[in-house]
Image 1 (cartoon, rainbow, N blue to C red):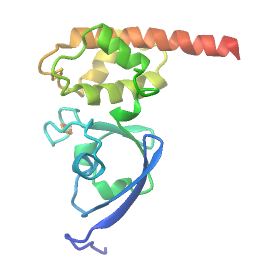
Image 2 (cartoon, helix red, strand yellow; image 1 turned 120 degrees about the horizontal axis):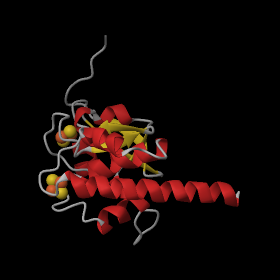
Image 3 (tube, rainbow, N blue to C red; image 1 turned 135 degrees about the vertical axis):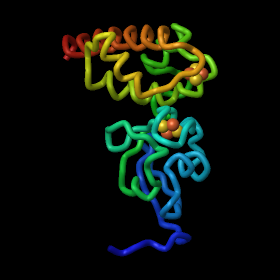
Image 4 (cartoon, rainbow, N blue to C red; image 1 turned 60 degrees about the vertical axis):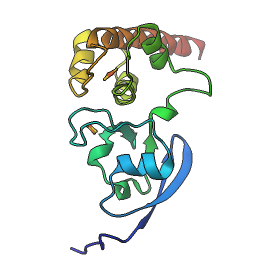
Length: 173
Ligand code: FES
Ligand code: FES
């Protein structure tokens, strides 16, 4: 198996929130550091750096992933979404983000980007989730200050709204 020299930097080209992006990374550089320090996408937070807290969750090729457990070079050629890509337009919030705001589902906000990314992905795949399913998903995320009750409430509200939206889109089609 060939090995990459540790100090050698490699070009990384990818799609970030629908736009082409590129940078250079040493083979050992984590995706968290790459996104935050090279690309300037600081919405992705770093907590435990061990895959436990969920703060660094992003979406890679449509799947939620811990950026702290991913090497930057692994996203070469991939499609990446971060929390900066959730809002439909500048100055607007996604349905999920708006529900978080309404329900006071964040306090310091440290965990929020990761939770939003996991929930956004989950709610796209699961139109009418149960509260237990939402709570099961949240076991992969640690929040130290808000408490989970308003987060669950926001997720359920957003799910109901999104289900209504998709039913309306179908009836309009
Ligand atoms: Fe990645 Fe905690 S920083 S899971
Ligand atoms: Fe502070 Fe979750 S809002 S850790």
